[in-house]
Image 1 (cartoon, rainbow, N blue to C red):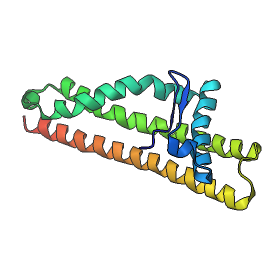
Image 2 (cartoon, helix red, strand yellow):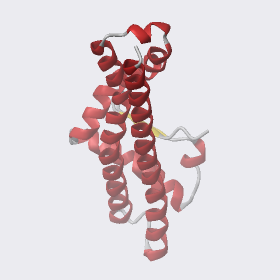
Image 3 (tube, rainbow, N blue to C red):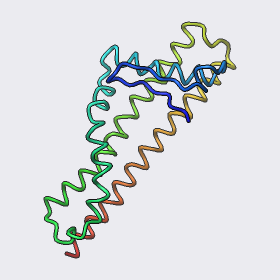
Length: 165
């Protein structure tokens, strides 16, 4: 339902109707966070550029990696092929790790933007925005932990397959 994001390829900031039309501190925080990504793009923030650059690789790897593990010919796979398969799963972990500084920095920029322009005022609103942005940041931390955990799982699967071939 919520589709709020900044697309650095088309230089487009997209907000869902639920965020765009909501007169709330949470909606302001979300909109400002996405604006933070646009500001990152404007100053060529390296982690955003790196993340944007590897998106096609991540999409390809996420589609092909699971199939690579479960193919029947895996038992006879060479060490080089197993290494490539490890790398396919590792791409999403790298993406998740690159995403962390991008998202945390966008949140910092968002809070500064909201305060500087007087969009939020007073301790109660500032704390509310900090909670919204903090909760969002933790979802990216959880995604990174999940991606690394999945990668490690598949590494162990592939290593065990190699051991018994």
